[in-house]
Image (tube, rainbow, N blue to C red):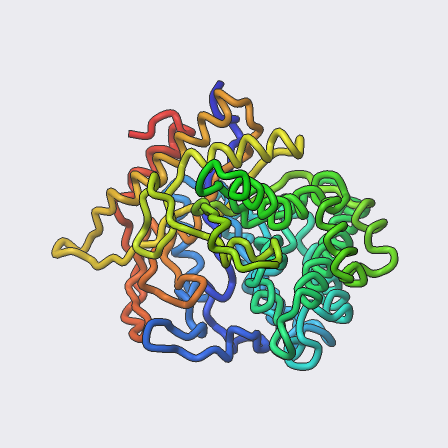
Length: 457
């Protein structure tokens, strides 16, 4: 077996990390636009200025050989307040970007939400905890789908949607007022699943030729030892953090174990009447996920009565069998293979890893280049794991997208944490000239893609 001839190779980004132009062409403010720079982070006003440099970036991706670019449509470019009147001017950038991608032979893939809640909806309604905001988002999604349905084949609604089941869900959903309770968290998580189901049904009812998939930040959990309690919490963490949404995406139903927990904890009211029927009515054409590291859990670290959705936060320990990046993320290619095969087996859907990579501090050397052999090794080992999942395990894998293959600020706004195979000349507090400079990994990945993964060395 070899990879499918239509295998998708490419790059993934979010709008706030790449575009810049935070106040141009009628764009409204998101929650990111008002975040200020700190000693170790930048603000979010420029990103890598792809808004003005998209032609250059598309040409670099074309030179690399990628055939897919997953990007986000910024909600506040189209609806400056998140609701109200459409800003027609806000579409122009995406019209041009999609045209440029298609001309370069690169398949555009659209993500509709990547944590940048419109500031108005966060301040007035507290983000996705509100059904009004859910309805606003679905309205926005329908407008975007209607515009690009003939040009864009692949769609996802939410980036890393299961993140709304653990503590990251508050910040990522625009929740800025009130206590961060389990009730609030499960309300947000269910509301996003309702929104995703409505969007998936809209696509399948009106545009049967395009495809939508659910997306997870997949967390593979290991027990710290063979102690039965460690094995129990590893299984339970995966059920609450992964499987709850995997079941919803692939089977149209939530986890029985999680539903039982909600009933026992008087949290079942976080699911409104008719929600389960709506979720049961939707389907997905593929399942996508991000993968960076695995998590090892020690039951001795868990305080009594810790909710399962917080096991990862409270029970994680370092796995001595794995290398660790300077950011504390443990590198585990074999875990990547396990996740690919597991999801393919469990969901019977094509599996699409759309974020993978390693963040590293980097500086240009005297030759104004970067010899990033560590990044080559990281991607090589993960791609070998992907091939084993396909060739040995029979996993149905439709592509592989790296995260931020052109350097962008990290999810925390740190330009020092670089994932790219192309260096962008800026740091947290000095934009410099934003020049794009291919690293050694750029030329390695170009060769890999040119051979459809047959030659990794």
